[in-house]
Image (cartoon, rainbow, N blue to C red; front, side, top):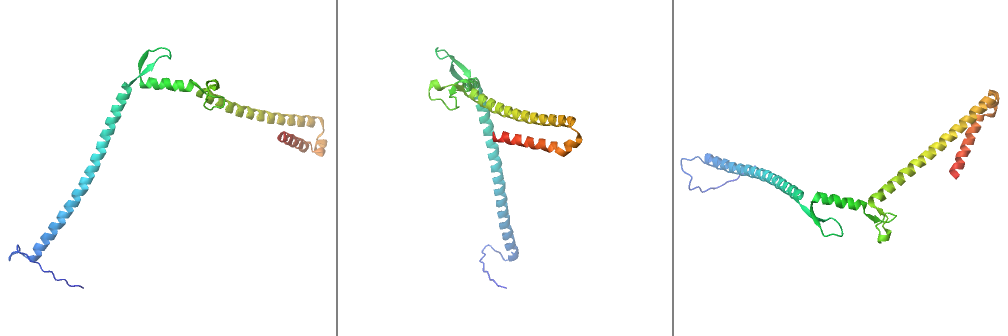
Amino acid sequence: MAKINIELELDWFGEEDNLDDVIKSQVISGLQDRLIQKAEQKVLAKIEKEVELKANEVADNFIHGALENKISELKIPYKKNGWGSEVELIPISEFIGIRYESYLTEKTLDGDGKEARYSSDKKLSISEYFIKNYLAKELTGKVSAMIQTARKDAEETIVKALENNLKEQLSVDIIERLNIPKMLESLQNKAAELDIKE
């Protein structure tokens, strides 16, 4: 254990004061000051954060409200036709609607869906191009599926009809000897192989 000797010159220390009490009160006073200072810093930081959040919220609400009101009141000069000089002030929402409709219906694409460089190449509007492509894909897929289903159904119907006719015309004994169902299945497989090769 280490022993430390501390010398203090206390000119304010009186004869009647107890050294232990004075040191104790000074230490407690210092600790209280530090704890109060830390608590104040934490409270101030929390208050600053809350104030900043509230200030941002109020500012955002103000800006949103101001912009919403201004945009709804904002009017843009719009020329009714290309030949005249008459200009009308219309709300921005109506102007955006007119431009959007023009964008969708104005013919700006060539037959391949690329932007046309020359006016003679302009054949499709954007909406026509997407409708054409969508319909082509949908119809191709559905017609192809219908043809495959119809072909499969027709083959199955023919095989079943042949089998039923043969069963009716031949005796059970002959059918068993010739193993006609296996022959029909083999014929069906060969027909399927020919279809695949084509």
